[in-house]
Length: 266
Picture 1 (cartoon, rainbow, N blue to C red):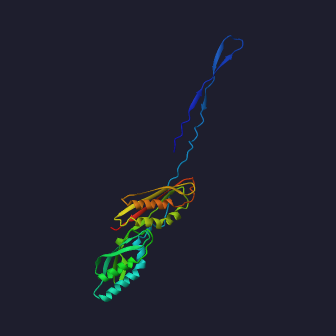
Picture 2 (picture 1 turned 90 degrees about the vertical axis):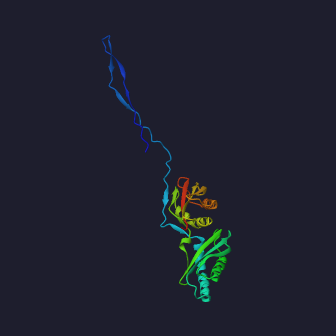
Picture 3 (picture 1 turned 120 degrees about the vertical axis):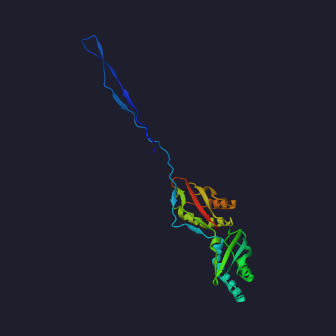
């Protein structure tokens, strides 16, 4: 709080000449001092910027990777590949294989190759890769994809350690009402941006920040990260926020800050 200026006290002394009739002598009479108190200075008037408001999410939003998104559709066909291979080679038991693929901008898999196959026949590995090669992924899923598929007891599952997640934590806003729904709507776009970075080891935090103008439009954006990330990831995230539309800020301007935690395989 700004300190008030101490009120200044002024002492005024008045001297009044008095004439006594019938006497030739004049005497000075001193009037008791009066205290004049100066009016207090007014409080300075200024715009105090509101603190960042926190838009709480009920729980962090786990953004699935292209691998995790595609696997549920692939899983039945992967199991069929395994069962056909098991009929041809009854001695084949549990196993695993890593499928690597290149993906174009439209999400089409242009090349899928099996690698590091263990416990599976070559025919099964080729069958899995061929099935992946026919899959249509969401645009922006590329440029590469890598999934490790485990077969246990005749069932197929995606190896968890190979999955990469983008976790959307609490978002900070200033002066913007009902920003939570808008931010949640950005989740798929931010997920697509994260996937463009390929494999990410360990964890990193991608901060996407922007200023919101009087009409709710995003006037400028910037994306930074705690760990090195490809330029295209940051540029993509900043561009996605730039195209968002918020409610008009209460004070005519607003700020939004979105932290995206990218969790990669250990």
